Amino acid sequence: MIELLQTLIQRPNFVVFVILFLWGIYIMAAHPNFVKKLIGLYIVQTSAIFFLVAFSAKEGATVPVIVEGAAAVEPLIYANPLPHVLTVTAIVVQVATLGVSLALVSAIYRKFGTLEEDEVMEQLR
Amino acid sequence: MSSNLPILLFLVPFFAGVSMPIVTAKRRALCSRIALGTAIVMVVLATLNLRVVMTQGPIEYALGGWTAPIGIAWLNDSIAAVVVLTVSVVTLLSLIYGRLVVTSDLEKNVPYYTLILVMVSGLVGIVFAADLFNVFVFLEVAALTGYALVGAGGGKALVYAFRYLLLGSFGATLYLLGLSHLYVATGTLNMADLAVRLPELMTSTAVAGGLIYMFLGLSIKMALIPLHSWLPDAYTNAPSAVTPFLASTVTKVALVAWIRIEYSLIAPNVEVSAVPVLVLLEELGVIAALIGGALALIQTDLRRMFAYGGISHIGLILIGVSLGNDTGFAGGMFYLVNDAIMQAALFMIIGTIIYYHKAYTLDDIRGLGHHTSPWLTGALIIVAMAMVGLPPTGGFFGKWNIVLGALEAEHYLAAFTVVASTLLTLGYFLKVFAAWFLQPQDVEIQSIEVSNSIRLSLGVVSFAMIALGFMSDFVVQFLLQSVSSGGI
Image 1 (spheres, rainbow over the protein chains, first blue to last red):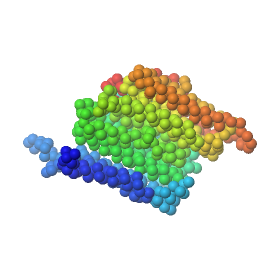
Image 2: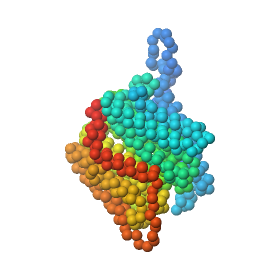
Image 3: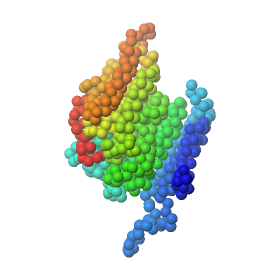
Image 4: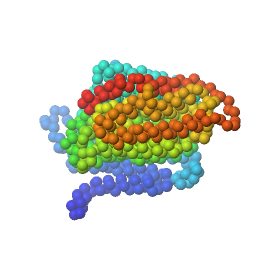
């Protein structure tokens, strides 16, 4: 038990990730409002991005650009670019998802006049 | 030229799709012609690509000249070639079929054609990509256009498209999470590179967790029971012009992505905390095949029935590829190709029935066989033979190889499941035919003539299902090349 607590305290980033992830799922599942469901989805997606950033963060690291003519390349002083590239791409994907989902939500609102899932389902029946 | 075929297969539909709204700004009538032309070009390119792979074996394509592991790799092997050809053919047929239905279903044609073409480019990307993150990006390209296509009909479909979006994006996020776990553990995203580094790391919880996340994410996309709930609703309410295309490609291509990951990363006999991974996947397939078939049997709405039928077939394919031997793998892959054609055929038939007869449920089609077009009845009989798995259709040889593989691996439950799901399929087709050929009681409905585009598309899919049966040995041997050439 104490070991578990220790590992948790040593990794605050990952604790935050887990909290965000579960919180997002809860909102997605529990809230009947479509926009709130979207917010939940957004939090889940953000938590994945947070995870990517959390493990790639490096204290005192610099931009991974190798200056031509530099004597030796020290891999330790550079930040790993790949997770950051993944992060940027994932954010773009997230924004695109948000665009499509907001379009769908606004179409639902225009059609059914409400954003509450239970009211919409009643109209569908 | 021949070495650039994979990227051409991606770029042609992508640019055609993206430039469609601009090119056709003045003349909207051009849309369908451009889309048809693009699909024809794709079929030609995919056939050429198949020839190249046949003669030269698998080719690794380095995007932008950057070779793996620094650059992003695409793998052009026999599986990719066959699946891309299938996707192109299905696209062409759905576009031909859609010409009639699209005008009545979707008011604005430009978004429909744009979305379909962009979606095809995403699907082609998923099939070719040999890089985990690249798969994620293309999954999202295909999925986002898929949500829009489901919702394009408006009305009820909007709500189900939104649900599909919530689940689908959640699945994609899980997949992203999984691949970042694997990246943390190994420091690479290239599948060939991962295959070298993973085996010794299989005891790590990060790797196991990553693989589980990726599988969960992809199984939402491929509608594996119990994560299938978006599919029946989405396909029941989507416009009939898009369902043949969606039903035959989306789930199958997500499954192809998983098969690539499974075969390059998970060695046979590998165990995580004493659980053999492949057997676990196989049991999930067993559950999906049986429950999917049983749920299809109790449906009365035809589209729901066949959507559940598709779900049960996903389970069958997963059984085949998870048996851990070549026979089962070839059977599963061959069945996947067949299933793509069968689902397209089924939803084309239902779309036609809805368009001409306004019939949605088993009660509505009562006695339809006596006055409808013989094209419809013929296609329905052939697709039923393929779904049940009667020779000489391709469905038989796929199931046959899966059963042989299961017996070879001595997994009798898997063999039993294939037979049982065949019986379930037979059960729901009996229900359809019982209604279809029932003597019409009262009202005399005049017989109809289906349009030429529907005749063409129904004829070609029916022919393809039988032709695949005759070519089965050849295709199976060709698909096995990917396995014998040292992992896909």
